Length: 297
Figure (cartoon, rainbow, N blue to C red):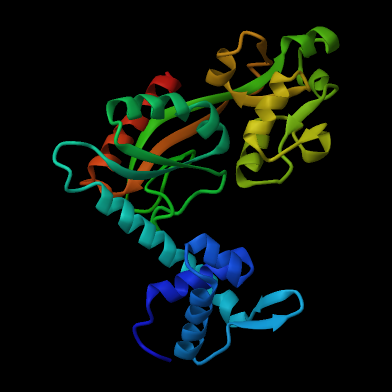
């Protein structure tokens, strides 16, 4: 195998794996299809192995190509992180550059937008990339620069600031309660349409300990999207768990059985310790901490 294989070859390999064809990969990378083809051929020569086989359905990746995908994705994350880090330096006192922020769907949709809008008013040359996913982005692999997490980070290489606990409670739209009645105890609750998760996760298992009777079979509406659950509650589809501060923003939402269900969701803002000296990351980190402190309070 050849030494010092260029990143651009692995980048093309990753694009072909992601896009499914040479032509689509070339469009995604902004290069020509013949160039993409030459990159794949050069990488195959360097590795002394085939990466794709041709068939009637197009390019089929070999086991080697599939095994390289995770490593190529890690290289891509690192390259993008290098670009973001470089963009934030050498601009005098002006905070500018690119910062990638990861958060859960409901926090990213309902909580962070006004915080980011205020941040951009203070620093108009700052570019924020907002990644919404309930999967925890890996800060050590630089999939994101800063993450809002609902669990305390364990990695020592991360800078973490706890902003408090967000309370979760059962809520329903007042129209739903007017039509179906308000449950007064746990037994009455399970006679209603209950909104909850589809997949049984560690968080759901933990929450079920404080939520008597909670099980997948007892749910009338199931979705793993926090945003979809909140939308169903607001639409009057049933009773579900949502963040108490969010529900307080909507006068039509009524909290149900607050003594029965009052879960606490620890909230942290985290970033890699190497980004302490990055002006855009520092400004974004501080803004997220202050904004989330205000939200939790």
